[in-house]
Amino acid sequence: MESIGVLMPRPTFPYLEEQIDKRFKLFRLWDNFSYDNNAIASSIRAVVVNSVDGADADLIRKFPNLELVSCYGVGVDKIDTNKCAEKRIRVTNTPDVLTDEAADLTIGLILALLRRLCACDQFVKSGNWKRGDFNLTTKFSGKTVGIVGLGRIGKAVAKRAEAFDCKICYHSRTAKPEAKYRYYPSVVELASNCDILVVACSLTKETKHIINGAVMNALGAKGVLINVGRGKHVDETELVRALVEGRLGGAALDVFEDEPNVPQQLFGLQNVVLTPHIGSATVETRTAMADIVIANLEAYFLAKPLLTPFL
Ligand code: 8YV
View 1: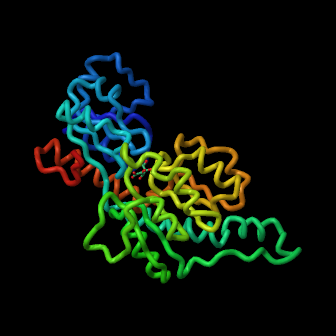
View 2: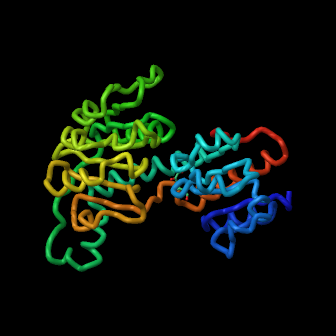
View 3: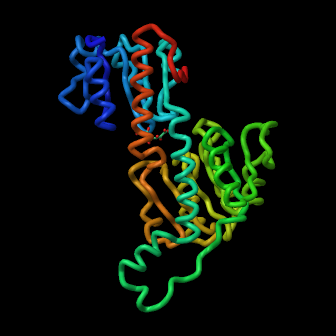
């Protein structure tokens, strides 16, 4: 397998790079790689991409012998899967291993937002505590959590929120008969009936801007939005407007429409918590994700079944 060309478009996690390098002929796009070198381009049989950059039709077209796109992440919305299907290129991703991490972060964001943990930390560190107590904050336990997308991550969030005695309701394309939670056929209805709206669905044509101005208004000045899905799930311009005008109670966001660019208007708002797309970003989870990427590459080139095929 040492002669099989595998391309990584950008540095991700050194462990992943090392493990690929040990087994395959790794080409690093950031390391003097030129698409114009036909011999090299023809030797590439797999690319390993992350969910944020993905692999568009342009990238795919550059490698005439590409057979596998392996995504180091669960979200494949940035991979042109139609192009892959047309060219019979297999696609793998890393579901399951990051579910706990994304759900843990969701609860962390809810608590950080409602209990204002980041501001509290600053309050103590700046010495302001000596001048008086911190303002009262908002309770999480017992609130109603509405989840958009009751897939793996949505269910893991629900399970955790249940431990906080929260009432759970959800919206997804269709009701899930096995779910014991209340289903709302529209996101506006869900938002009208919950305190905390969590976006945990995958990004598709149908779910782009699923959180629009009407949803924000339905959630209202006492409601908060948590986004651990994709930036494009939320109409960011509308979100900034709703927060600035006080029509929405707050937001905790791990993902943004144009990462790493985040609307500056959000920086000064007290009712906003921002994290830099860290849903899966722990050593443990990123290692597990890397191991799946490697296992899929090995399986593919040994003609064994893929572990986590997307396509
Ligand atoms: C990562 C993700 O940010 O799994 C996903 O869909 O967005 C993340 O886990 C990314 O793919 C790792 O760089």
